[in-house]
Image (cartoon, rainbow, N blue to C red; front, side, top):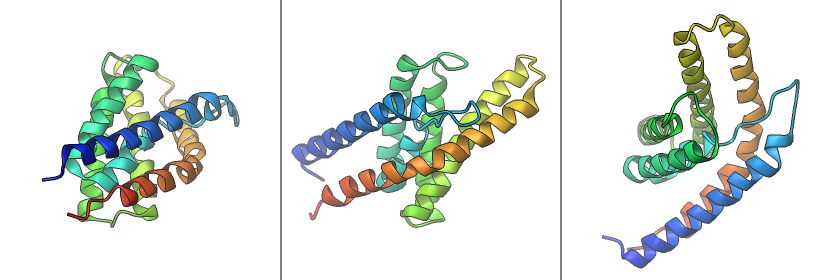
Length: 170
């Protein structure tokens, strides 16, 4: 069992890093437009962190990150990001534990999965609502995914350093 002070320190550092990444999204990435599309970093955060921290801790982070996103940005329905980010964190942790070792390739795969799941869930919601422009929306999802993946260069090293520096030697 790890000391509580260790856990508090580790998750405080993660929270500060996540806050900085939220700032990166809203202050920088949110204003970048390529063919009318902007990167959407938020789903990448629980995916990458869960690949390092595992199923239980990663899913709790996904839940909290989803709650914050639901409070900050509108989703298709109340609690959309909470449910989705928890699912993304669970799947990312399972991928990191069973298919790929936590590293850049794993982070790239889980980030792509997170972005496609987020876009796919929005597409499904629109389809259920009777929207007929699903092909166009699918292209938007693909474009946003391709635009967001280079931002992994900011997320991956930051979370990897925290994970390695805050590793317990008990």
